Every structure is written in C-alpha cells, then in structure tokens.
Image (cartoon, rainbow, N blue to C red; front, side, top):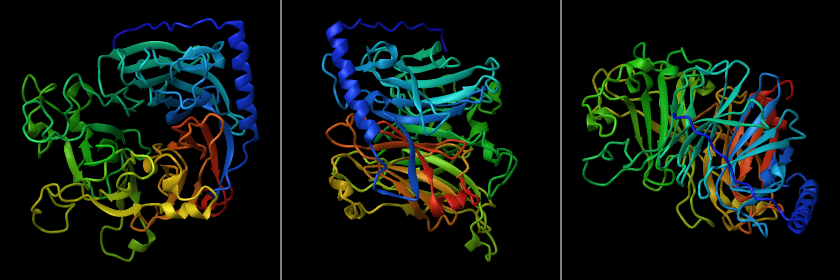
Length: 518
C-alpha cells in the first residue's frame, strides 16, 4: 500500500443551526432512552444500545485492546435514513457537529450495558461508503507496533475507492497509515493478523475469479466475489480436516469464498498454500507472465488450481457469507461406521428486495466434509467419481416463515416495509458459541440463533427482533449484520438507521453455551 494522508474538510456551524441540531439530538436521545426491550424475542435480551448517529450500518467487529478495554467498530453504508435539515450528510456530535459522510463508527463496549460512541472516521470523498472493517493487534501484525491496534476498511465507490489502513490505538485520534486506491467493487474483506495478508474483493477493470470471468473468456460472465473467510488463524488451524488426504488438508490451509450475493451463487473452497506465491509461504507459480491480470482458466479451476471445492447454488440463491465450522461430531452420527465427523459451511444468500418482492432467501448448512472427488479418500468408492468436484452438498436450510411474524403486533415479516430474508452470519472463530450455535441476520426477521450441533437438523433456539426508533427510515428497521465477541455478546446493526444493539442469550439458549450461566 502507498502512504496516503487525508484531510477531511469540516464546516463551522452557525449559532442558530447549532441550536437547532442540539434540539433535534435532544429529542432523539429521549426517544432512544425510552425504548424498551423488544416484545418480539425468545431466549435473548438487549443489554445495551447506541444509535450510531442514525447512520445505516453494515459489519460490526469487536476487539479487546491491550489495556483491557473492548471496542466495537461498525462499518456504514452511504445515505441518510432520516435527513437532518441543513446538512448534506449527517452531523457528528463527537466532532462539533461537523457535516460528515458515513464512515466507521467506534464504540466503547467495555461495559455492554453502557456502550459509548467515541469517534467517527468519515470516508474521505463524498459518494463513497466504508461497509467493512477488520482489526488486528500490533503484537500480532507483522510490521505492527506492540501496544498498537490497526484497522483495515474498504472504500466502495468515489475517487477514493479501494482500501485503507488506520492506526486506531488512540480511538479518539485515529491516524491513516496506508491506502490502496483505484480498486473498484471493494467490499467484504478478511485480514489475517498473524501474516498481514488481506483477501480483498475488488478489481482494476474486469471482474473475474470464477472460470469464465477471466479476460478472453466467452459466454455468460459469472458473478463476482462477495467475500472470503480464511481459516488460517482458526484456534485449531493445524488440525486435519474431517476427511483429510495429505499434509495440506488442514483447517488453517483453507479459504471459503462466497460469490453472487443474491442470485447465481457459488461457494469455492480454496487451498491457501496453492493460492499464495512462495514469498508468502505458498507454492503458486504463474503459468504466464500475465497471469495476475489475465489468468488461464486452468489457474482458476482444475487439479492444479487452488480451487479444491466448487459448489453451485440454485439460480435464485446467492453467496453472501461463507462461514466454516470444523470438526462437528453430531451425537446422532456416532452409531455409524464412517463420516461421523463433519466440516460444514454456513452459507447465506442475501434478500435484496423490500416486501418480499423476489424469491425467498435462506441460509444453508453445506457439508464440505468431502471437498472434491479428485482422489480417495475422502470419497467412499474405490474409484474416482464421475465429476471431480462432486462433494459439497446442502445438509439443511435455516429458514423463518414470514407468517410467524403474525404472532406479534407488527405482523407478517414480508409486510413490515423493508427486506425480509437472510443476509449474513457471524464471523468470529473465537466466540464461545462457535460449533454449537450460530447467529443469522434476517432484516425484518431480526437476528435468529440456531443450534447447529446436529447440522442436518438445525433448531432455532432464540431470536430478537429490534424495533424502529426516531432515527429509522420510513421503511422501518432492518437488522443488517451480526457479530459475536469473545465474551459471547451478540451485536446487531441496522441498515435503516436504528443503530447498534448489544444482546445476550438467556434461558435454554444460554444453557447450551454457558451451562453455569453467562
């Protein structure tokens, strides 16, 4: 990344306008303070809330600082769900009510019952958005400074499109350290803290990655990458996969990539070692001098490519999030002779239209125990299968009936104004729910908690459906993304301005993870 400095221009507010904004904020603060627990919940409760200044939010990420404090960082979309008179964007009360485009919100969540917004990093150019954020400690990051904390975020759209790295050690004085510009279609990245390697969707010109999308290919163009998840830092990174076939078949040598968002989805399983060149610990050697910008199809798929698993979704379903869970040993499998241990991927398809004006969208549990049929084991036959990529398959679907919303005052989930259906899952390997429960964001369906210990038959054990407030757009609340921190607190953010809720499991759901209590 090249060094880059950014100076955000701020306007000085006139006295009358300043007084008007104070009145608006006072009204909103009262409304938020009076908000009660949602009446639409099961085995969950809201612990804390911040409004994120009414900014539409995407992915939250939580990290514990070297001094022991906990901070949540929330990426945001562009736009103003509830415009404020006199402002082009939205006022930032943490910066003398400066008119700032949306960027990254920093929230002190050390005490989840009293979260506190401490800083907002706006995007550098109007028209951009910074939906995604990843964080690393300087003690882990190569080249990092001990005691420091670093942030990697995307900038989508505008002349600043690309990625930025910030030093956020002082949460009230973040410093831009590096930037990579002129990369389009940036979005949902992943950052390996112990290597510094980032897997960042985006391209210079054309969009490729799947076979058929590379320069010179003919026929229909496949969907672009939405987001990868690397298991390189998984707590069991050096353990073999459930159906390993050689020293490279370990958890930490896999990347799971989702393509297509809402339709024509694909999930690929990537051999990390084959993907990276020797300088980064891998074995990839370009087939031609132009392979980086124009790879051969054989470099994208086939026995010598990094792609070891290739799963096609139905045309009406897309690949938004592909979260792997390794080494499940379901109780019901243990009387059988083989395949009693399973690796799965939680594969979410994004609903993209309001009021269910589209096909239904679900989150799937995909069995990736058999990644491919190029060699045996892992297949069951003593001969190769007819399709070298035969292997991954859907075990089950995590779905919510929109009519179930009619049990509550707000009614059918499809008629609540915004989108209904899945969007994303949590993405933290170190959270205490991992391998037992998962959290799925369902827009007007709120956040749903599923017991995945029997992956062929997941059970919904908890849910929480937030409510609209004074900052929410007229379309209503829309639970957009979810994350779980290392303490087990669940964070949900709203796409339509309703802010960030910090949630906690209760009852039978909590007993699954915390038998002695949370």
